[in-house]
View 1 (cartoon, helix red, strand yellow):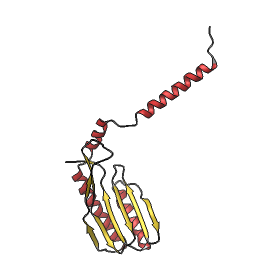
View 2 (view 1 turned 180 degrees about the vertical axis):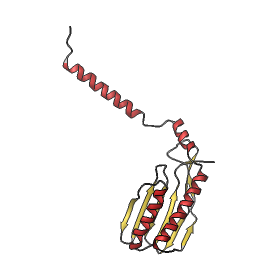
View 3 (view 1 turned 135 degrees about the horizontal axis):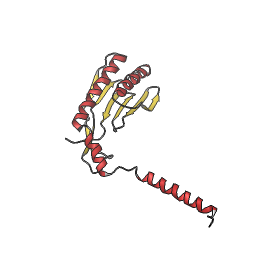
View 4 (view 1 turned 120 degrees about the vertical axis):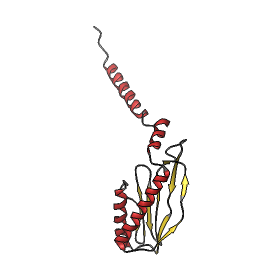
Amino acid sequence: MTRARPCTGLVLATAAVLTLGACAMGNDEPTQDELRAELAARPSIEEATVAQDEMLTEIRAAIDAAIGPQDWLREETVSESGCRDFPGNDGMVRGSDRWVIEGGVSDQEWDLVEQAVTTVTGEHGFQPPSVVRDEPGGHRLMISRDDGAIVDLGSSTNLVLGATTGCHPRS
């Protein structure tokens, strides 16, 4: 009977761990077919835009309820672009018009605005906000959802509210 050398088992065990680790890491990238299927399962860009506009209406109503009725001005800034998450696919991202309260809101009102916006966006599947800026006289939140949608809210000279859809198929 032959005896195995002690380091042979160690070499085999190390090779097995490295092979399993490499296999597990190699499966993280989705294929083009998987990307196409994910994009096709999402609502069209038109449906996503309607839902986004409805959510922005809810956000404005929640802000008005929290700090009193505001004179919202609409800046027509709709933008469109292709999708980085789905290269080579027929997807689109659309940015909304911006909604503005001239003069912004006070620091005391900002806390109420942040709470109102976080509640509405949470009901629409968004994550808790990321605070980009929070200092006296200047505040900004970015609120995102797993599909790439973003709500952007800031207040300094003016309060500005806007949103961008995630990637959705063109109709």
